[in-house]
Image 1 (tube, rainbow, N blue to C red):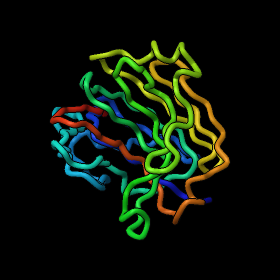
Image 2: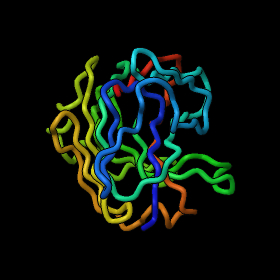
Image 3: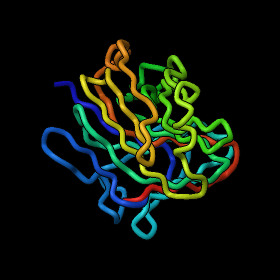
Image 4: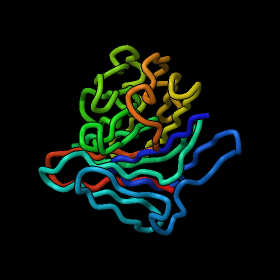
Amino acid sequence: MRKFQILLAALLLASPIFAKDKGGWQSLFNGKDLTGWHQLNGQAKYHVEKGEIVGTTVLNTPNSFLCTDKDYGDFILELDLLVENDMNSGIQIRSISKPEVMNGRVHGYQCEVDPSSRAWSGGIYDEARRGWLYTNELNPEAKKAFKLGEWNHYRIDVWETASYLVERNSGCLCARRYDSKRIDCASGSRHRYCKRQRRKTNSLEKHQN
């Protein structure tokens, strides 16, 4: 089976980040430091504070991604996140970064984190490739799921070697999509979970673990 990694763009996590594959549930964050993670692209700052991963954007720099070192196959990913209301972010899945492709720019599927009035959190975006694949305009009820200024729980199910994605936010089924254009067809075989951070001004985000 082709293996993949998890990329987190600059959010701050709080409650454990867990991924489940055929071997059972695994905690991706030890609650103490960023062992098992590395940064790609951008200049956002990441650190651990009170058992949470904190990401801080840097003004006028490219998107930043905090990525798992380890590869994963088909999986279920669960995490809690808190983000400032003027932030735009996302959770990259089935994503890759290779020096010979767009100078190493991270690209692939993303579960959106969107606290704006557009309210597309939980939608599916294809970072640095095709753009939006599934927005909450297709599922208006999903617009109500994301709670501004509060911790939000995300669950992402990915099966069949990156083709079938199911995303839930705070118990609401936000998106379900089967995609014939698999990320491994784009370039290479190195995939990871990432968290993306993008904003025009300095900001903080939190992940629970």
